[in-house]
Image (cartoon, rainbow, N blue to C red; front, top):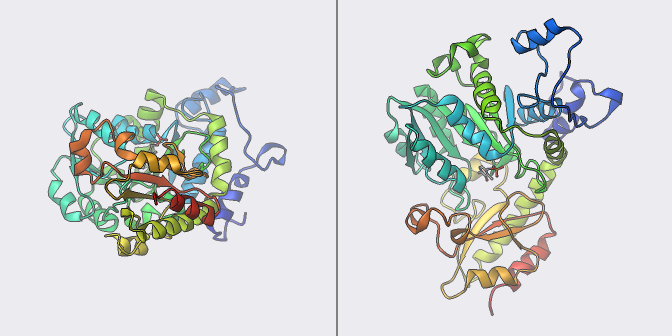
Length: 413
Ligand SMILES: *Cc1c(COP(=O)(O)O)cnc(C)c1O
């Protein structure tokens, strides 16, 4: 790569490994399975431990295969550094583990991935106060802030109802108040949207989804965009203030969460995700086009009661999505008319597979209220706008006409 040239998204991902030499000219970063790393000079080992010299010590805190993936994600998000975790949830849990203390306050969007919602409930019971607000309007976020608010947390396009947070204005608000702004970019991926462009401080990606893309490896990441001034953050321990302040936050997260809680990404999974990432832009283009075709067909059919997809002009935040995102994503949800059983509909699909992942190459469908949002109960579901008949579709890369035919033939005559 020519470091003076600005390359496109896919070129950068494909060639980023070769910025650092790889043994034997291998085009893929090798899978380093070693748990530990030996040094010829014991003093060197001590300097690595003391952070005076870069290097690997023990697999839980870092591994060369995982580092190569971290560098790729940093490049994708145009950030300053990234830490990978075993899952997307582990990356989100790191916020509570490493950055929050008793008495702190968090403002979170109420439109959340189900397990993130459950995680915030747990954190709430551990002495940290979490307020849930409708984050499609910055005024609701502002009204919830207190002097103890340390973090504002939102998703880009909420799963499964596709509400879009007031991303830009929340960013301006957090920046003005010195609050850490954390954006879960999983539903858009760094190909469709850069949270850094709306002043996000930290970006979460569930690598399991679009970045890995083939549903064959779990992983998560947390990227520092470099925009947040960590010297304003009250919860940094003195030990992590040894280097310059832009590095404080990630130094504390790598130690207090990754090292101490130990949800490390394995090198084999990192390799699968890195290979998947090479084709992310191609897959996303196809998934977004397929999703728009399916959502358009279903919305026009009178057996369908509602379709939620930011790419439809009927979506309440269609204009915002058009302004912020390169395309509208590979996920939509819809409700069938009363009297049509959602289970029967799903069972008539020949291509859409009843399964709970997202961002897979194959189209996956799930009856939301009966599965991923079952545990939270009917009242909280209603508060999140989840109809009991809601079907979520994670659109794959199949040929468009095959998908449209399949979703149409499954409607009852
Ligand atoms: C799947 C998902 C997560 C969690 O990722 P895992 O790798 O399954 O732990 C977090 N946020 C969003 C928006 C997701 O879709």
